[in-house]
Every structure is written in C-alpha cells, then in structure tokens.
Length: 547
Image (tube, rainbow, N blue to C red):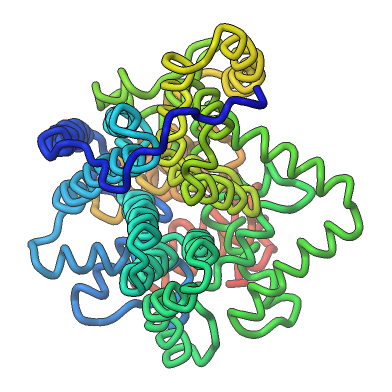
C-alpha cells in the first residue's frame, strides 16, 4: 500500500457543499438531538445532574445569581459553568434549555465536520462525514448531558475550521480567531490546550497570532485565580490529580475512586503531606507520577499500552455516570449506540475505516490528522473515558469517509486486499472482548441522585436508590450511612441500627463526621438518634468525636 495516498486531485479551495445540503444536515442532526433530549426527560437523571455535572450546576447557579464562581482558584475549567450561567441568567432556569442549545451546537458540529471533509477530500467525503456525525450515537448522547463535552467538541472543531480557513486565506485575524477558539476550548476542557498549540505549529510564521488569541481567551481565568486565590494557575488546578489518577500502579482502582470519602482522602493527601496551596498540590501529584515512572519504567509502559488498548476500544467507558443505561429512555440511542458480541457500535465500526483514511489521506488533511494524534495523546496522558475521547470523533469521521471513498472508488483489487489485511487487526482490537452493555446505572451515580432526592425531601425514592446502591456495591460505606438516615426517617429503627453498623464497620471516620454534620445543620433530633446507633456500632466506650 505504498501508493495508497489518494490519487485524485485535491478539491479546489472554493469547494463547498451546497447550502441546501448543509441546511439538511443541520436540521436532521438537530431533530435527532432534540428527540433524544426530550426522550431523556423521563430519566430521573435529567433534572438531577450527578457528580461533575452537579459541580457545574452549583457553580453556574452562583454565577447566575451574581455571586461569582464559588472557587477562588478554579478546580474545573470554568468555561462550561459560565456557559450554563449565561443561559440561566436570561431564562427561568431548568435543564431543558441548556440541552436545546447544546443540540444546536451539536448540529453545527455536524456542519463543520461536513465542511472539513469537503475542503480536504471533496463533496462526497464531506457529505458522508456529515451524515456520520449526524448519526453518531455518542455525540448525540453528550449533546444531551449537563457536562462540558458538548461545548468542548463544538469549540475544538470550530477552532480547527478557523485554522483551515486561516491557512487557506493567510489571514492573521483568522489565525487569532482560531487561537481564541482553541483557548475557549481549553477553558472548557483543559486537555484541549493541545488544539491551539497545534494550530500555532500549523500557522508557522504567523504562530504569534494564534498564541495571542489563546492568551486573550485564557487570561481572565488566570487573573481570577490570582485575584481571588492569590495563586498563579493558568486555568484550573485539577490537572495534577487527574495526571496521577491516570498514571499510577493501581490504575483500575484509582479511576473508579468514589466521589465522596475516598475522593476526599485523595484530594487532601497533599495537605496531609504538608503541601500548602492549590498549585503546589497539583504539582505534588505530578511529582508522584514522575517518581513512579522513574522507579518502575516497565510498569509505567505497561500501563500506557493498556490505556492505548482502551482508547482503541469500541466500548464507551463512562466517568461518573454509566452511558449505556440511557438507551432505556432514548429510542435514538437504542438504534445508534450499542454492543453485541463482535461489534461495539459505532466506534468499533469507525476505527478501522478511520485508520485506513489516515493512511491514505493524512497528507491531504494535515491539520485534522495532527489533531487526531494530538487529542489522542492528551487522552492517553491522563485516563481514557468516552467524554475525553469524543472530541476525536468528528476528525475520525472525516478520515473514515475518505478511507471509504478510496476503498470503493479508487483502490485496485490488490490494494483492497491489502487494506482489508491492515484493517482487520484494528477491527478486532476495537470489537473483541468489549463485554456487555451496562443494563443499570452505576452505584456512584445512584448514590449522587439519591442524595439529591433526599435533600428535596423525596425520602422514599432516596431510600430505594440507597438500597439499590448497597445491593450492587456492599462496600459503599457512605450509602449505608445515608440508608440509616432514611430508615430512621421512616421509623424503621432496627434497620437503621443495622445500616449504621455496616457504615461504621466500613468507614468509621466518615460515619462520625456525618453525625456531626447533622448537628451543624440543626438536625439535632435526628443526629441524637443516629448517634445512639453509632455508639452501639462503635462500642459503648468508643469516643464519637469529629475527626
């Protein structure tokens, strides 16, 4: 396949899909995304974002109410909370309107994908890539979630489009706009910083304009961190801990660390080691990675190979909230996102064709090819999940369409045989051993939803979810503690006592602190009864003090 690169002439710089075709792509993509969002409104998670989504909402509400972002130094990149806040400051709140706007952004991503394919490989490829983006299940899924992924994909692909236009026209202002778009993507998903850096390389002598746009976008976050937190942090300080989560000797356990007591212990580790300051805490975790890599290079390299395997897997790996259970509510996802033995759709179908397209067409689309490599490297630098991999998808779709066109229209019989031989390992890698689809929500998401329902006074629903959580994960001490609270609420003293004992046996420190938190919140009567159960669990002579 040494003569594999596309032999047809490059499309002229003015090549475009007809406006009617772009409009149809936009409308079709928008209808699918709106239908998915409306279907998901039946899910209890629609109005109760969990874990990271809950943190975004907390920050956005504070901003919309004029209180500013609650973090003196940003923990998460602030772009998405400000996006939500801008919506809620102009509306009555609610979770439908953000999803409608994200559906519009997702439909624009479809148009951008079609434009990139057309500009690089011609109209047939552009149209095929656009249709693929319109129907791509995981893009539709994230356009319907209160997470940064949808906005992040839009900004990454938009910056790439601006970069391609700037290259064609030689415009300094377009290069600055591309840098600004890349900077906005960085403010939304920090690992997207690779996008403006690659744009700067692609701009060659005009790279200062890209960096100027990046600086203009990022400067407000840096100034906020210095002004309110008195620390020099460019965007956010969760990079170090994420680097450690993705590069440590117990990767599988660490990436699934619970978002409560275990997570707090991890976050507070630098302070226990005498490290002061948020930037210093981030550097503390980065140094841990470097020490481990230096002390066990073989183990470090084995982990990188494992992460590469996960990156190329057709399975959509969740972070915080399982993805496949959404199919129970969305007919769109039941068709467009699934796994059966031997095929994980759609990524398992996309990867082999995209690999072929990169082989035959990377020279024709150097910036999209560089972005595929750069974005993939950033995922591998940290840890592999669907929401970190999803920005790759529009670019992969362009190359998949190019690879498909070459295979059908240009390749000789011998080249097709060679291509099939090269694609087979990628297909097997992406589709074999992916396991079944999750049929129920993961315990962490159930726990987060249950706590939200409990705070709303919906104790029966919360209790049922806590019971489901401990049934699937009996070692979940926090869930046992909250289940004890629910049983006490309904006067089920014996069950409350037994649940408290389980909670204390699993995590004494968290259980004691929870009792004291009830006292601080003014729930003295409930706290007193729970403290009696706690003393029985701890032993009559055991001190019950706040740690």
